[in-house]
Amino acid sequence: MLETFLYILIMIVILGILISIHEAGHLAAAKMFKVYCFEYSIGFGPKLLHVRRKGGETYFSIRAIPLGGYVSMYGEAGAVPEGEIEPDAKRSLNAINKGKKAVVLVAGVTMNFILGLILIFISDIAFPKFYTAYGGAVSISENETVELNYAPLSYADTVLDYIETNKNPEFAKEDYYLALPGVTTEKNYCFVLDSNVKIFGKDGSPYMGGASYVAIYMPRTLTKERDIGDSIAFYPASKEAVEDVYQTIGITAYPDFTVESFQFTEEGSYVDMELRLFPARALRTEEGISRESYSKAFFEASLTVPTKLTFQEKKLVSNGARMEVISEHNDWNGAWAQWAKDVPDACGAIVKGFGSLFTPGGFSNISGPIGMTSALPQIEALGGVGYIFYFAGLLSINLAFFNLLPFPGLDGWQLFVTGFEAITRKKMPQKVQTIATIIGFTLLGLLFLAVTIKDVIALFL
Image (cartoon, rainbow, N blue to C red; front, side):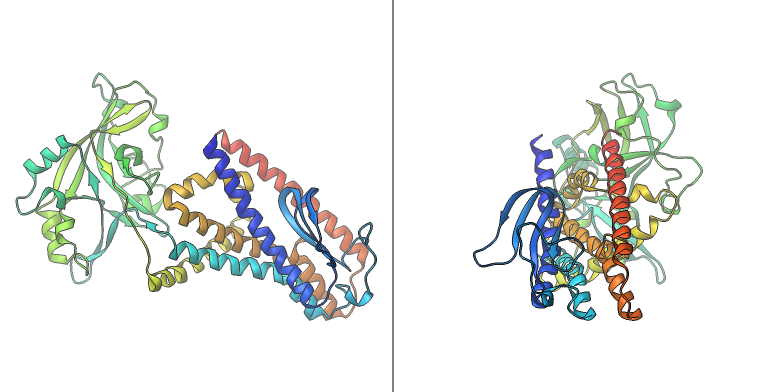
């Protein structure tokens, strides 16, 4: 419960900062052009805090529902707030020229975009990066390379004794790392640990008639040392391929089950598999691992270690194999290089996400505050606090993109109206704007409600 409360608090803080910066952009631009602002509010609904400095003109408010905010400017739709004296007409939002008005309208999304860039850079410079494995491309011929990936393991004494007895005498047992043959996809690594896994019941009887399964390394966390059994998913070894990347690494179907959904839950059921080790530590240099040393290590000096994973309380626990944490900080130049990669990736993901909304099943790609909060534990597990900063930056840029849409109720709609009036030199009827805004807010409210219901249902699936 304490952890859940912490993640809820983190999401409230993130959304509060994003909203307050957005509205601060509008406020600062409006003040720059002498537009009278009645109120700067974070949230909607009943007032929790409502103050105005002595001699000031703008109330600063915090309201009970932290799902948005606004700056109330003179000249926008609606009457002058009760108790306020109507300002000079020259200080209306509609009294400034269209160019200045456009600056006021776009200031919020600009601040969100800038904030997103800053948060992503903070994630790259201030926090360690966590990695699935060491690795990189290794040349094995003049025209061919392979992806060499390896991760450190810590073992129980019995396993270390096995390694000591069976290892290549040229290397020490501390030199051996877990070999992770696989391919790199756009977003993650897919690693095959064993392609001929057998599963047995407590009495040793084969599961599913002795069918073979592919064991894939899919870590649930990168920030903590963990038993290797907690990072493995199983896939049927022979079915019609459904995705190219899986077929490439030897997986021919989506997973039919993971550890949690095995049909048997009897304590003592177990999995027999083999882990392949090779002496990466002895071969690592600043330049990486050469073609010659890679070939010798992998084809001549690698070591196969039998590993038994036993079901205990519906979890897989190994006979002493634990994955160690791999992390490092970026230096100044490395942080800028990572930032230059992360920003286009983030913007591309957002554009791709918006595009997917107009495809079948696109609604499932939308998440509200509940869905985003439920994602925080996984985000933190794969990247620590740095990933949370990256996530906040992604949300900030996403908020900028979303608000630029020319949809009634959003900044993009007001920008569209301003542009329309500037081009036609005619004012769009206020009645039309009011009706469009009401419809827009209604549709946005219904969308928010539907997304919230979807996110709540997903919590129980």
